[in-house]
Length: 333
Image (cartoon, rainbow, N blue to C red; front, side):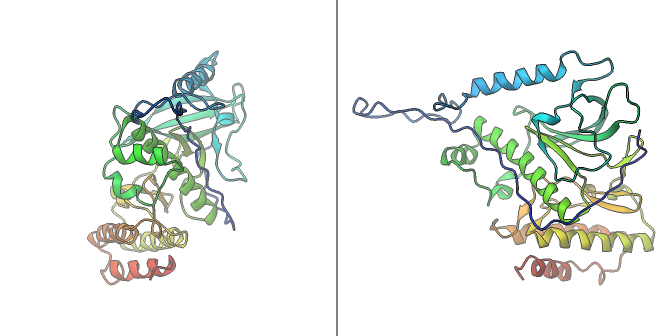
């Protein structure tokens, strides 16, 4: 098994974000026969139009796929690889990544629990081939009953679904709308990671997205996760180096018109001296979101406060100066 997975970033001049085309539920009116049509509740989607699946059919199809993934799995595995049914990360795919459809996924334990999602350590390996395996971080957003998307209203500004009915469901936080929000978080994080990876930002390689599960490059060594920045007490020289790495990373985000949205020392990892930005479901478009500048400024103040609290001189980690620079990079200054 690979001792650790090396980060290798490649810049790209273009990137096409992937968006889910959610089913549009509706029904035909009996013209001339109904004087008044009852408004359909968003939680009770009507059968889909011709050629589209109903919600029940979609659930049955999803269950059938789950059953296929776990059928006749070799001993020691939890499921067959679902690479063929997922959205993939940017090409060229890293050499360490196993993409064989004959590969088996095996869970090795939980890495982190969070308010919106849990992260598990996953091994993807080709049975019988000791040299064909890789470690992945499986980030799974919780089911609707346990989801805690805190303060999501501000983050969702600037993100619009393609259909007005879906927008209404999201605004009213119906069960259907909350499911769409969960999908939006996963889609947004996967798209942001893919885009930032191609731009050369220090983020984990986004392997694939299937529904609300993301498989990401595991940041660590021999199954041990790299520490969060919050866990470290860097010496002065290392602290300054990490700050400079952070400024470079935030500059890449700003050049793409993005802000992390929830940046803190807990959303940064340090692997072999390299700063890695993680947890990007709430990534904010600083141009489209009316509160974009506010989120960016808050990110900077939060993280600058951590660095100055660890001894970095305030004139080096000046939040006002860094915010102004990032807004200029994002062409908002």
